Image (cartoon, rainbow, N blue to C red; front, side, top):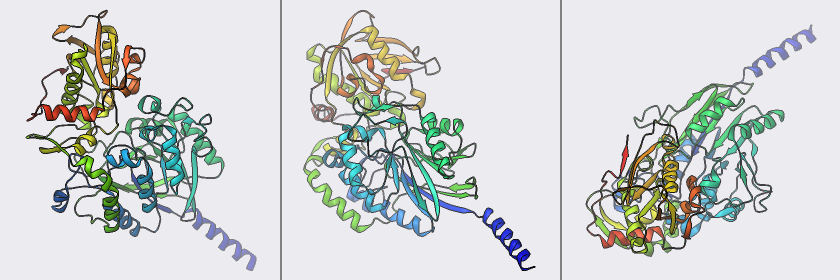
Length: 518
């Protein structure tokens, strides 16, 4: 009888265990882009005065507070990042990855994926960052075995333990990172679906049934990965700077976006939001509930005083550069990502005009600036060098070269080929006009190309100015790599833009219809 009762108790216990729920809060950021200081509503610099008046968002001080508060509300949380900590302000220009590593360690991140901007200064700076952080940095869809700086340190996936359960984390970066950044010749990138499935299968074989992908691939690719793989529970996204929300009317989709049984989240960019997803798993590792909402880091979130003091200390060497007043403007200069990657924007018009004006006396007729190189807007009032450098942080130099009209048209076709995805290759131009139809097939969208007011001639050679990144094939502009008489070592694009603003004071932002959307 005693034996029978013991067996019954054991059965009851095992049944209870089978029904046990595992609850996890996933706190997440993405596309922080060195915004250690608070930002304005335009995602650019925010003055101390405006911050004091409650008009600013984000900054590392608020992020520290928000993470601590969110952790206090749960007994089981992880903190992860969807990539692109690097590049975007003078802090990155001056410190490279060192300040990002310090702040992420302070906040207690558990893992991050490699964003394309983590390769902006080659594998060396990424390797230095990885050696400084206390957490794994992941990338599954690339072969780094031939790159000695990363071969033994950059893993495809990892397993961490939290709340007595194993969590499998997989990294993902854009397949076209070789076009978007400077990873060097030793790294090859591959299809995200196959890469993720390979790591899922490996983790599953190790007995891990809760799998989270940290993806710097964009909202569209994340939905494809969710649909075409099995075993992925959550995708924490980045790259497309997508706001997912159930309450914000500017959101691109719900938070989370469910594709099958996979929950997809993303929290815009620049530290303006802290994502917080509450997930419940059953004993088999299946999601039974996934709810949450990104938290806006506005004036209601108190800045952590110690962090603010540390950032202020780090900012001291930058102050002389950034405080120089370039000019003043009466209206905002629009550098909004959604506009500059889809149509003519006033910031793109300014930059392209500035480029062309600088080299017009060298027989250059046309300027092309990639929309993805425009990183912020500037509000009305005094314009400082710091603001210009926030818009143009990459230290790109002016490049001049010659190509035929046929190549120019091919370049414009590349520029509008991914407009529906918000790709950074969209061309802001000067010295030319064109029209495009986004509903047509990519490669046959451009029409009505005029240079200097005359129809473009396909076999005529034109002088072009762009930036060294685009001239060397960045953002898909491979047709420029073999251009004639290429010179990539002109002045810094930010300096050129600042000097043009000063020379044309008072500058009035404008667009003039040089790009027609059909």
